[in-house]
Structures are given as C-alpha cells and as structure tokens.
Image (cartoon, rainbow, N blue to C red):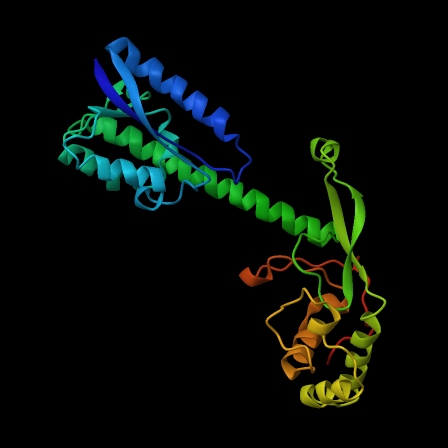
Length: 285
C-alpha cells in the first residue's frame, strides 16, 4: 500500500461550498491512486484562502511543506484532486521541494506522479497554473465591472458607512431571484433629515467665501453636533466635542454631496449616477 497525503484548497470568496469542494477533489484523488494501491492517510485542506496565496502562506499547505522535511511524516506521496488549485508559477516554486525530499506528487491530469524530468508534465502544470490565474482575473474583472455598472446605472449603494447627511434605505428585493428568495435586499442612500440641512449649510458658507477652519469654528460655536457626535458608531476613536476642518473639507470634496454615487474610489475607478438625492443643490467651487 502507498500512503498518500491529500492536498486541496477551497476559497469562499466565490461562494464555494467547502464540504462539496473537498468531497469532489477527494473523489478525483482517490480515483487516481486507488487502482495503484494507494490510500489517503492524512489531509492538508485549506478553506477560505485565495488561490493567489503561495503555499507558504496557506496554513495547511505550509504544514504539508514542513511535513515533507520530516522523515517520520507518515506518508509516502502526495495527491491533489485538481491542478487548477495551483496558481501562476506556484507549481514551479513548490515542486522542487517535493523533488528534493523525494516525495512523488500525483495529479489526475498527468495520470500518476509528476516526472521532474518530463517536459510534458512540466508544461501541463504550467498551463493549468496560467489558466487558474486567468480565471481569477476574469472573475475579478466581471465583479468589478458589474458593481461599477450597478453604481453608475442604477444608483445602487454597494456597502460601507453612509456619508454624513445620508442614511441607508431599502430599495427592494435583490434582482437576483435566488438571492431575493433568500431574503436579500438592495439598498440606496436617502437624506438624513437631521444632518442633511447641516451639509447644505456647509456648502452655502463655503460658496460665500468661508474657509474650512472658519466653517468648523462656526458650527462648533452654534453647538451643532459633528458627524462623530451625530452618529456614535461613526469613527468612535474621533473626538466628539467639535468640528474639525478636515471633516469640513472631506464633506465639500465628496462627490456624493453633488448627486454622484461613487464605488471603488480607493482604486481610482469611479462610477457615478445622478439618481442619488443630493443634500446640496450647489457644488463646491
């Protein structure tokens, strides 16, 4: 009997079921090794870790790499259920460790153990690694494009803390039937009646020529609660006793206050729509 360690991975970012993913990878691995008298005696299966992470940064995969160095490791070979579980050049970076410790790596697409001297085997694994990287990039592009379109064309609010002057409102059931059946809803921004007039006033004072610091000082003198005081859950580490000029500046420069919905701004990829109600009819100049 050949004792095998099973290595696998499943990410939850694309809604995979970890148990189902593990089971089908195990099924493929067993179908490969059992006719040759192989039996899986231990598992190294990572859940919730992206394929882009190198093996050394995945807890269970790293444990496997460390186990290869142990003469009393308890297994004779390693089997994986799908070569797409590798990513980019990960195979080229990790397989030499298997070769060094003379631990065969079995892969279904090769039909058995990978021969380190076989160029065809190396090509197969390199191709699958490239396909895995390309698939992940395509998923990333589709998700970002879809979310950008939802913000731009539908005015959808895609998450995060609402800006001061707004609050989150229900916008109906999710357009995806399966998500709607699970009770998921979509959201939009609506005016906060307590804070929206303050935003309008800030824009008015700025247009009249007041500086950031002068506006902050005026609001503080009048006893108007600053954003962190108006909403106790908003940045609890901030002082709640006075308006800061940085807060005033952030409000004046936020495109949402001029009626534009923004998504993914931190990546410098903005999507806008005029469907969001604006607390101010006047944009900063």
